[in-house]
Length: 261
Image 1 (cartoon, rainbow, N blue to C red):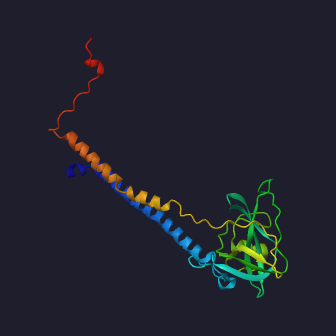
Image 2 (cartoon, one colour):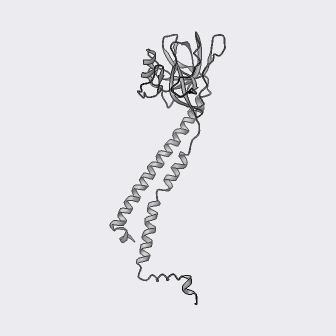
Image 3 (cartoon, rainbow, N blue to C red):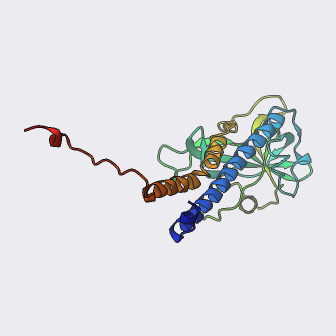
């Protein structure tokens, strides 16, 4: 069997099976990495999502939010909304597309925090028609929410007051002011008298499902030896067929050949 394996045809098949096994290993490793990422993300959510809020400026600085430790940290801050709301296009909420509503919150020390106040559905007349949005409250307001990292700019040309992503350069240009590097997804707003002002629809809680990544990883790893198994079966078959002492295969007899006419 070894001599037969060393022929060009079978060596080529062996090389392909090794390449397939390596690719299956890498794909399984990638899928398992996705699984581990979601496990770690859920652990971060468990630690932060319902925690007591900390001051927003203890997390938000001029540096990007650390996704591994600060993402979804529950924070609070007080300030005044100091600019027009900006709408982020094509954002899903509960599987429906619409706009996320951003507003700049100016703090007492002059720093500005981006607050994602919530979501509004697309207009019945289409995404090109801006829907009505509840304005931000005037005067002092206390905000409680969760820190999120800013996104990459998509550098799209959109109507005034709209952006394609929650990106620092786009928002600084829209509001003509420097912003802290991160934003707060709103949980609640409180006015000095304790009342809650009108706001857009709350964003859905983050998805905690792990998905099928772990199962896919094991499927890829279990498929690694498939090529080698097929080669072994093929070599065995060829060797049996080439064996001179192998009994001749009986000729198949058709039914009508056995009938006596």
